[in-house]
Amino acid sequence: MDDDEAIARSARGDLTAYEVLVARYSALAHRTAFLLGAGNEAEDVVQEAFVKAYRHLSGFRAGAPFRPWLLRIVANETHNLTRSRGRRSSLELRLGGTAETRVPDDPQDTAVATDRRTRLLAAVRALPERERQAVVCRYFLQLSEAETAQVLGWPVGTVKSSTHRGLARLREEVGDELK
Amino acid sequence: MSSNEPSDALDAFESELTALGDLLDVPAAPPPADVAAAVRARLEADAPAAARDRPEPGASPAVRARPGPASREDEPVRPARRRRRRRWAVVAAVVVAVITVTAATPQGRAAVAQILRFAGIEIEVGDTTPPPVTTTAGLPGEHEVARADLPAQVRFPVRTPAALGEPQRVTVSENGRVASMFWPGGIRLDQFDGTMAPYFFKKLGPPAPEYTRVNGREAWWIPGEHPLGYIPREDGTQVPLRQAAATLIWQQDGVNLRLEGAGSLKEAVRIASSIK
Image (tube, rainbow over all chains, first blue to last red; front, side):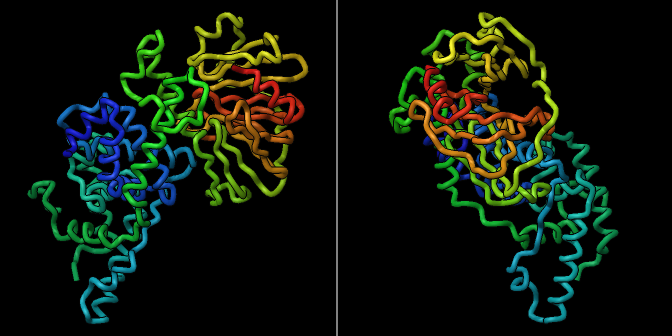
């Protein structure tokens, strides 16, 4: 069952078809919620987003891509959560344990690469909120500019400019040179 | 990024960022099948609202009316209004279906040992009795209405407990989302639509809320007086209302109810059970 068929059947009240959609997109939704700042409440956000998405399926344009439409709802739910908590969305980002296994064997290269990644991540965390959101969507979630615009509810031009400013700041912070 | 490049093509620095994204420590997502099942269970909680005349809320999901267009025709309500009501109802049912016991201590609420969410009410249970609210405020937009005008002003069917008879005074707040009834002796019944976020909050010290049942439905008794407030949906901050007396909270057919001032658990349950 492809997305279009699952969506059409879900819109007619077929919860089994909707379960297929939920299962298909739950991991991406979870990653999106977490990276946009939902922190340890990402699971709640995801559940809430899927419930809301189901209620709003009638507003879904048939044939449109489901992914950015769903992620928009996830982003909104995340935003509501962080706003209701009265704090800047926390980007609780850490490098995973797998980082060490992916770098060259040379211990010095490893150390340099790890240090650079750590600094880069810290710089991302420190970005102004909008720039950070753009950078997270574009690179950590690997969304296109158009998708990012839809997910964040911004004009494409704003995505471009925020991404551009964010990148400039990051380059300034950690340098452009690659090891 | 060179400005000549197509904006969706990545330069080396952007590629480095993308690679960094793959190395991030993102907590494991729950198994997709579990998420799907949980979402389905929540959507099915809509069923009692769609078939609200069925008396047995404990019926298994399989025999519940399936949410969907087909279930809309059992009541002569304008579709838009009905749809909105159904949406509120599912949310309320959802909040109610699971009591979320959060052992975590969210930022800024370090003294809170537990947060219970039930029937549209967020209950913060702490180790010590919270300082009382010394002021009294009304709900947003609260205004008195005639009992007969309630159905037109409130977004859900409002009920009256037979055990108390007609209320002395009735108010509507929050653009028809909350109906409050008052009887002599400080008894009040608030009925409100479920909201995506909890609507009321209560702060409690010991003793803990007590589990009971109202007409076979799960209910909780908040035994002592406690600070009560509401959570505006615009920004999620907590706005204190007043010091509330012991309260019974439960959920019935997609509507959240709180009965305050009945004095004892037994009396509160007796009154609540007379709401049909």
